Length: 102
Image 1: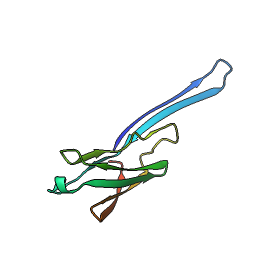
Image 2: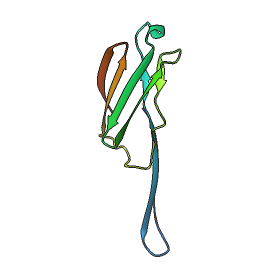
Image 3: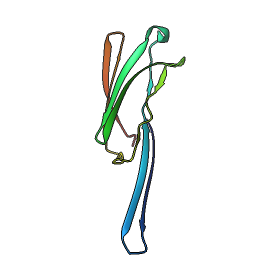
Image 4: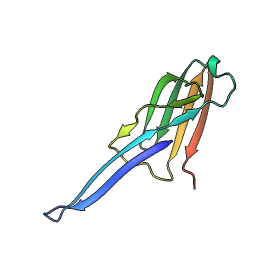
């Protein structure tokens, strides 16, 4: 997962606290099999407490997929969030979870 975020708090001239943030999430998938050319189109979903994304694409020549832009101004991902990823290809399906590394 490539995750970038910006979070900023400041006190304005009236003494009120203001806040702004942005984030981008780009799950990176890597096919570990040996038959990359035979995989064809894949579909994926990636769900987290802050939302999700899904799509259809093909693997690059090295077996990688960098999924959608994932840009958001919503809730920031936290270190204890769990992502559930499902990938489908050639009539096969695999579901797994991702957690932040300690």
